[in-house]
Image 1 (cartoon, rainbow, N blue to C red):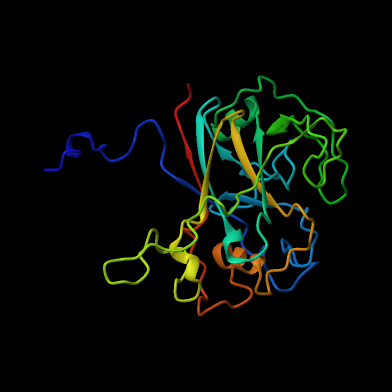
Image 2: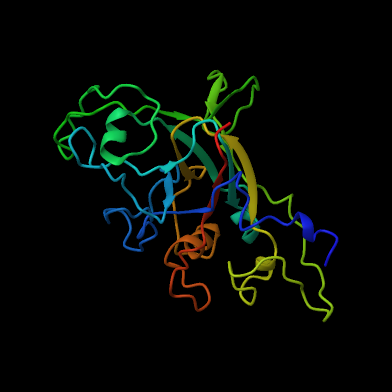
Length: 280
C-alpha cells in the first residue's frame, strides 16, 4: 500500500464528466482544394475550422423546420459549469510559433430544442426570428439561437493582428505558445529520451513527439453549448500538403495530406479534449 492509496478516486472524478474528443469534419484537409465540399486547402486562414465531437459537422436539427440545414453542431455543457479544455500546441514542430488561434463560442438553445432533442435550454422562447433568404438554404424560417464569442475588454493600443485599436472589445483568442514546454526530452534509465506521453505522434518521425503538445485552458460555461473554432491569425492560406505546421495539423486531425511518415489511417481518438464540470 502506498501513502496515497487511500486518496485515489473511484472510477472518475464526479465533479467532471468524461472527456469529449473534438475533431474537424472528415475531409477538411482534402487535397482537391477550393470547390471541394468542406475542404479548406488553399482557403484563407481566417476561415475557421470547427471542432466537434466525433467530427460531426451538423446539429441534429439541421434542416428541420425552423433550422438552417447548415447549422453547426455544438458540444452540450452545463450552463455555469467549469470547462477544462486541452488545446494542441502544434507550433513546436516549426520555427514559426503561435500560428493558430482558438476561439470559444457559446450558444443558447431554446424551448423548441428541448421539445425536439430533449437537450438543456435557457432561452425561454421558441418563436421565429429574422428569416434567412439564402437561395441554397431554404425554407427561410428560423428560430432564434443566439451565440456569443468569449470576449474581453482591450485597453491596449496594440491589439492582436486583425483587430483595430479603436475596437475596444475583441473575441478572446487562446493562442498556445511554446515557452511552457521543456526544450528537450528528459533521459530514461537507458540513456534514451524518456516518454511523457504516447500515442499522439511517432517519436521516430518527430523528435519532439515525446513532449507535451497540449496547453490547458479553463473557462466557465456561458451557454448551453460550446463551439470551438481554429483560425490562423496571420490569415495565411490553409496548406496541408507541405511540411509545415498545417501538415502536422492534418497529421493529427485529418488524413495526413502531406504523407508524413507511414501513417495512412486517421486516429479518431486524437483531438481537442474537453471536460465539463457540474454546474455551480
